[in-house]
Amino acid sequence: MNMLNTMPFETLPKQTILGIPFANIDKSQSLSMIDSLYTQRKSNNVFFINAHCINVADQNLDYRNALLKADLVLPDGIGIRIATRFYGNHLKENLNGTDLFPALLQKFTSHKARYYLLGALPGTAAKVAQWIEQYYPELICAGTHHGHFQHNQSDAIVESINASKADVLFVAMGVPQQELWLQQNSHRLNTRLNFAVGGLFEFYSNNIPRAPKVIRAVHCEWLWRLAMEPKRMWKRYIVGSLIFLYKTLLHSLTSRWQQSNTILMFLRQYPNVTRYKAALHFLSKRATLGLATGCDRLFDLVVSGLSLIVLSPLMIITSMLIKLESQGPIFFSQIRVGKNGQLFKLYKFRSMCINAEEKLKDIRHLNEKSDGIMFKVKNDPRITTIGRFIRRYSIDELPQLLNVFKGDMTIIGPRPALPAETKAYEISYTQRLYPKPGLLSEWLFLGRNQLSFQQQAQLDIDLFYKPTLFRKLKLILKCIPAIIFGRGAS
Image (tube, rainbow, N blue to C red; front, side, top):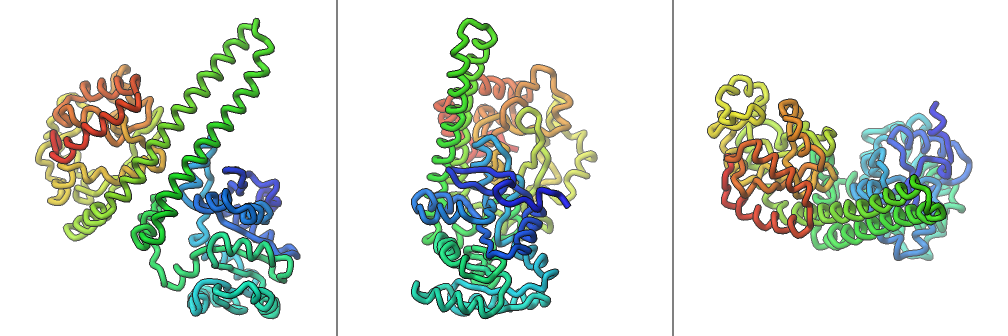
């Protein structure tokens, strides 16, 4: 067994965001860690944190202390993934409690564990227990209780849980009530593990439908929740997300600046040594570059996040039309070349027949581009009827807002190239592979597909060396009418 799996939380690989540490481990390691906690004699608390949790902890000192004293804290959500990148690290895996639930139950079957469900409206926990009994009959339901009880009833509930001889307790009362209740009462519980699981009961009781797998796969379940409950969720997912991203970006930049200043103060003691002067220059440039990069990322997050919300009705209608016209997936994914030549998966609405890639070799001789790099043909027989419309008005490109939100792409930059295309690049054109690829580019309103590749590449390279915020905003305003009227599209 990997020794990492049996380490206490204090010694696990961790990331800290705004003072809240969590275990930066993958799914298999988290399950092994939970299994190790199960064998201990004390009652252990396992919590999950997302962007909303960090915001609440920033205002609620008791909740913050509960997170700091937890036996295991796991990361949940795209916001945590993005914030981890702000700090220069990488999140190993998004350990969403709702997705992890079946794996936890499977793990507990080997122990023939008894479980207790506490939380949600009356009757909801009983529905979840029925679901568990259907799929995991080896587990024993020790009891259920709704989460709408008075504070003075806590003693009776603790006694009920202990009398049931439950090994595992799942508490679904929302943040921060569930964590605070467990922090206050875990020392009195005879359970082995206590999980704070938020809205999990609502999903497994079918009270609230979960987002389709394709939406979860691209880390946009928050957008689905917002569409399902806009009045209740808009403040958390729009206002709260922007506040979280602003705070984490500012804190990460401040932390890096302080680290640089510590080194700078040391190096200034040796002003006459050439190599230390060089180090001073390097660190100053790095701090300035870090600030610019952070501002660019915040700009991308705000623009892409708001665009996804505003354009979600159009994206839903497009998905339905694609599905009605032809069989096959709604989305089309393709490997493209990202920043510094790194490969990533680009998302688009499917505008062609499902075997378009295989048919390309049969129509390559129809290519209207003479540069030998790009393939464009006006009446491509592989394009569907809906596909022709969404390509003309660039609707097929909207899913790339997800790429921007994830950090694979930026709003303004060179269009991402296919790996096969880059093999035909002249040495001077490889400069367009240095920056992060963009959703919008200057040549989109200067002729689009009517421009040669050489002209497009030169515009991309020129933008890379003059990437001012004013220029980016100006380009966005120029691109909008070009997209609406479909200028130069094919």
